[in-house]
Image: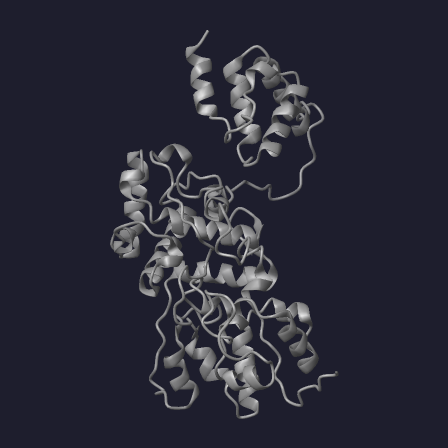
Length: 422
């Protein structure tokens, strides 16, 4: 059966949430969003999943395929564009899976890389949480809908998808703090005062939120060192949120402890936003999430300005490129000067020298194995890396295999045995 086209409908705005757009469409017909969802979209009552409290909530999280098909036929908006107006459309960029019970999800998403602290800065294993999924609450709670007052005053009520999640604190256009739906609704209805002045976001928060908005509208984020995929940015941001909650007792070095203290002192918040017992960011209440996002924004800003040193695997992305002198006018190379060696020749020469030195050195062989398999989390990927080193000439007896009935080999213990042993 064909579905007739809506005679009136506004176009979705870049980055807008699906519920926000449909709220504006419903207003054209004198309806509420819930009425439009029930009567025209067939989305009434309770959702079918425990983390969604109502059918309307599903619009911004995981709208049914039938609803997206109907919206496409009703409005003519491309289905791919409609998918990106919900969290499900940003999987696996924003998160690996919508399901909160995926084993190892926290370790895979948050624990694979680091930003502020290196592995040797931590003296205790990192906490894990299960079940878990990034950015969405671990338990059902009232919907969070926020918007920008200047945007509402200019164009009426509308909201970005990321404004309805604990990811952004400010409007990327006006750099003002977002306000709750109730307060924005008063302004949209014409009851707000002309003296309503939105709170200005700090520079650190504004920069962080501009990058998040850039990621969801262009697919890439421009960092000081280079452009990165939006998926890298979300994982970097979530990792920083995790690191600023690190208990001081978990930090091995004085420098790391001083870094954490400087972050919270600069943010003007108590250490770890006053958190006592550790819990993941997604399980916190909104006020504490705000404090954590401010702490993360300050941490990245301090790393970019050189006030702190980001020692993690992704920390270099926050460092600006070094200034290189540029000649004021083009000059020709001096024929008498020696030619610069090709960088690839230097690389392969050093690479083969390292391999030759490790052939008869068990400790050096294990160190190379650690380098080649550092990110391997499965037996297959680990054994492929080990096999490649053996093909390069290293001795198989120097390289621990993955146990047939165990977890990943403990290379630290193997290194200690290599150093202490014969």
